[in-house]
Amino acid sequence: MNEAKDRYANTEVSYILQRIEQYDGIVILATNYRKNIDEAFMRRIRYVVEFSLPNVQLRKELWTSSFSREIPTKELNYDYLAEQFEMSGGAIKNIVLNASFLAAAENRPVEMTDILRSVRNENVKNGKVMLNTDFGIYAEIMEVADRNI
Image (cartoon, rainbow, N blue to C red; front, top):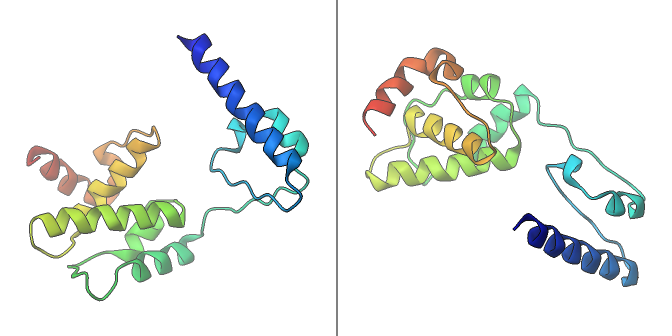
């Protein structure tokens, strides 16, 4: 089974490399997992631009600006979110969207529990396990939320 997957992946890589070499313009590739880029790609890349994760101040701005006025919120601790969770703007966007859906499903404002459950979900998607203790001052709230699921 792995041989079939490897063969398929190699075919895809070969096809993409061929297309890149035939293209006469600028090609922009983006990834969150540079270590997973095939060496054949790296040999053909002239410039690599790395973007670091946003710092605490920028994360706070991302958190506060991610909720539109139409989305009701209740007692969100933006300082805590910015300081506790080092993550990209894209991850914050996904978390805000998921938390908004959780709250909307129950016809209520977005609360910290929704955000924290969504943080956990985003990390699980990326293969990271989060314990309730990872939520610091909100660990107890997460324990209660876990029992109510």
